[in-house]
Length: 323
Image (tube, rainbow, N blue to C red; front, side, top):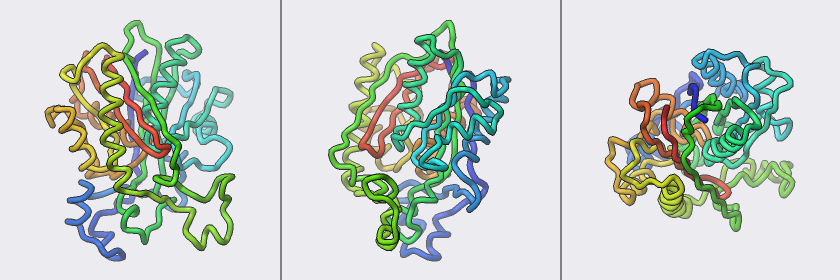
């Protein structure tokens, strides 16, 4: 299989670090030093995750010179679906004009694109489908407490889409996925599911918002990214020196820098755009990929390694040869 096209979309509203200074006890310097973020995009009140996903998907279809009906299956990786059900992918496919096609969501937070790429690869390489549209899309601004300095500054909204299709050459070289649900409270949205439905008490306590134990997530993120990278490379029969480009989940610049240091990769091989988008969860890797392709940084034959981590806790890496 191969990636036939890739595209991105971000909402028009830009929230800068200086904007946060107006209502939070923070500064541009404090945010920049700790996260590497300068701006992020937030959806409008009437914009949902499907709206962002559709915009990215339309661009990906146009770049691949395809109609929506040419795609056999639609997958949306998201932690912020339009509704608990139906799946956001069903809405995306229908609004694109692909009613009747297979469609489903993947809910594994920031690891969503990595998991989605692996699942889609299995479906295409096994012959179940010839062509899949995978979208990582999020509106995390809808579920963060704007008064919580520890989380409000981190998250942005956006979508990245790829059209995957069967190919004589195989771009999917190897992968590693993992998860540990022993302590979900490390990074979770407590209220909204069957364990703790949203009620007046939950809203009064702010349980509908993202909760994160930052230090624990940082330590987990670095070790999981390194371990997943090495296993995926081993399965691809490659080494760290074979990586032409690393596209990590854009969660925190310090996390990325720490992982890159341990992996001993030259910084020019690591694609980072966190300063513009913040943490867009499942959308961060495909947005970064789309920018790299637009800038013609990636060439045919390049080995690209996608690696991410997120709530679950979850992690994963995919080794990909560009064609």
